[in-house]
Image (cartoon, rainbow, N blue to C red; front, top):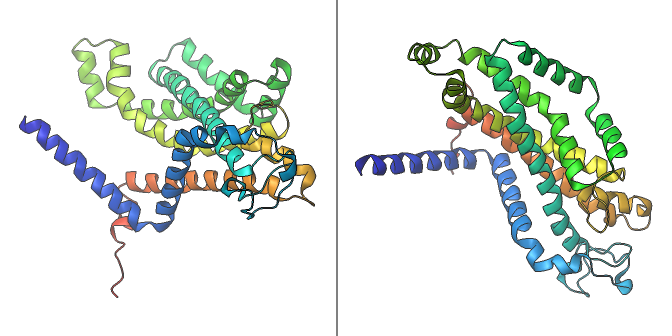
Length: 305
């Protein structure tokens, strides 16, 4: 019971310390606040404004932003069919974030496991894994995605698979580099001397030490996947109507930039803020996790009044 209490106190202290570090970096704090609001919109927003996102209103066609005559939902204006852009941004966020999260999770799990095997084993299949990663990396990721989606056809499943495959080499090489260093440590030799199998050593002892690095890479890669998905949707090879994402909203408004700029501006701004916030927060997390860089946050103090 005492051990459980001590562990709870230690966890609460770690969370409190992270909160202190976050408040000392104002840019990271703003990024975390924006991502928190975005997460709440993704989880609960479609339940509130989901029906409005597809509701046609020819009287509100190309309605200018900051006009509250039609209600608060039209504060960002309306598109060419009179649908409120605010509602479509909230619903589109769920699709965009969902596709990016699924692609990053699949690439991290599959790429991480392949990287573990390639780094620990010296058999022929480890070389096959590395050469496969080299082949994928030799093609521009967007070009490869365009070819595959044009051949198989655009759909949610194909989009997730393509995005996961194009980002997998990053996790394979990162996991392999970590394993090459960890397999030479004393605890691996001790486990081998006690008769532990290769699978137990790899997934019970080495994988937990590699996982934090892979999670950090996934947080950084999340923004890249959002941009790739938005680019594919902009080119018409992403989600097809009636479903939509932020990239598809930008594509729908590109023909009206001179007369109704807000149709493409707001989803483009949402993509910009989301990717920028993810990169800022990932940089902050990397600083906190590195003892050689953590002093930057520890040395910050509130200036006296």
